Amino acid sequence: MKKRLLFSLTLLFSSLLGTSAHEANAAERTLAGTQVVVNNNSLEAADILNRNNQVFLSLTSLSSLGDLTFAWNNTAKQVTVKGKDTSLQLTIGNKAARKNGAAVTLSTAPFIHKGKTMVPLRFVAEALDGSVVWNSNLQTAFVSKPSAQLLADANSSSLSTARNAAINLPRASQLTENFEPVVETASLQYYFPAKAKDQFIEVNNNVVRYYQLTKNTAYLKWQAVIGGTAAAQDKLYFINRSFVKENGTLPSFKDTTFASFRWMPHITSTGYGLIHKGNWNEVVLQDAEVPPTKLKDNYIIVDIPEEG
Image (cartoon, rainbow, N blue to C red):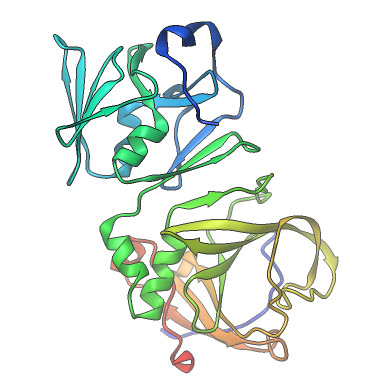
């Protein structure tokens, strides 16, 4: 059933350089706060190790990079990782490795730590066609490898399909801080500049974030904590609250028309409409139910007929 929702933004407050393995034991440490995020999924601390400022992780924790299989040769102390287009062969204590049969040299040899095969993060991620962004301020490595389907959707001529891919692409940040909402909420608001698919704003409770897409990754470029005091915002006119704290750089959107979406999981529906500075607080959002097949992939952005 179609519903009509009055648009209101009363917010729901509700360097990875390596050393040899035999030298590493003396400098081994687990850094408090060191994290690895693979395709937006944070790995367990037990799967991450820092040795002499190089990040290692357990081999099997990279399974979220794709449909990988792992084989262990106990006699040769050798592990084989196979993906769709890539095969890696790594030997414990040996910098010599193979990628698709060709010899390659690691900066640091794999080793066993507490029963787990630990490998250099950057080498393995990039060998499997992923990309790595290291944020020294956050002590976090962001590993990205979108699926083939997600990449195809990101380049789709369908605006809603491309936008859905955009909000689901792996995310990375090179900002100096990470703002978290006071309460995570499944009810999110997204804003894309009219007809755009390569940048978006996400509002989650009291945190607003701005992302730009580059090389199949959504980079966090700016974020702010929204306070409770009423205030007009020059850059983001549709937020009528003060910013308590900001980090990063936000382009000026003061005269921009936005495609606005409000995801309402309790009724599996997305409210949508076009807004601009002169009408944002009076726009009546149309309501579109999201089919279960779309929900499975978190494809909650819908078409706006008026956008063309």
